[in-house]
Length: 531
Image (cartoon, rainbow, N blue to C red):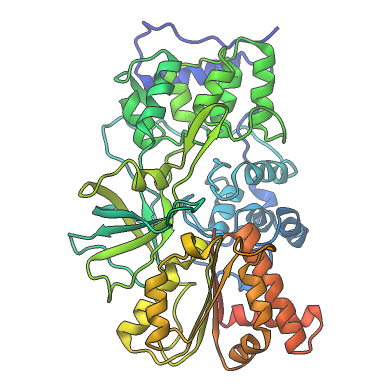
């Protein structure tokens, strides 16, 4: 039969924080060993660089490439110290959504300073499972419990790196795509009325969004709770349940720890086993792409104490967008290109947290908490250098900013843009602007790939291959190469196309062609902002 952990009675004289700690202690004390304890490592097996140590050169971490599949990244890091192997399991985007960079997150896990293995948003469950498997060979010891945080009534925060968010004002979320498009892409403009939002072209804008209120209401109803019930939030602060779920908790992707809590409290043994397998990351187990409401609906016997569940969820992380404007052109504004995420699954409408927060749930004039994340690895070269920009779909965002910046500063370097989307008639983002840039000579070349406008699909990498000789000539003339967009598919295909062009035009074998691209990257001439 299924083991049911004892819990404190509802009238026990404890605060939510004390109750959550004691319930967890009782679950571990009376558990039958089925629930995995948090994993820590003995430091004797780990060599972690001290704070302030020089970061390795790109050639020293060849797995730091989001276009590489996970198994290839792990193979490249095989035999390396544990922190390097952990880094190879990350999403490789250095997006900052976890509050770290890929390398520093891996080092924090390796030394035991960070125990959460689910912070990598781009990597998701695949990364968290890989991290658990890698840590399985380092030895496990019982963690030293940290002192409980003080209860206070604070406000939302974001990871330490961005600092406190600023309130911008939404001006518009106008549709860029036209009638007949299968996509909905928006031109979002945010006004910086305080004058404190300073950014450079190439930077990202972090949006501190809120969860969909309708989803929060459904979760509270499924829990059989009241919105104003005080609970322990993810940051150790006591808040009303509705506020915690709306502003502070990641409910779109429940953490492994939260799933383990559900497993330990499930009365039904089959539900408990499935939830535990999900928490451990076994592929094909449980509902795919499940949010918190899914888990509560599909596993009705899993009803842990509220604070125990809520405090086990991951903190809400900001979402990052490439800035699509130059501060010299769009004074006091930050522009974004946003594709709102909306789809149906298990007879319920699903939405992206930040994308629909900006495009559907915020009205013009309302505040949006934001911060700037510097992206020093994606910067324009000196003004006389040529640039080649490859940005299909919303990947055009930073290149619109690049072109605005080069016009505003009078830069004389040549500019070449590759852009793609399904159909010219409905999906040519910023068509009028780009056409005008071509007319006035700012944009020297514009190659487009509209994949559905002919019988066979054509993508940006195909246009690159058609222009192989010219592209090689630009590279040999010192051009800087930029790629922005989807990492798993587009960026990988573009990299393969570039390697083929370099090999053919430069008469190099595949190894030499890859080394040429690696040298461009080391020199700062091949930069990517992919997601």
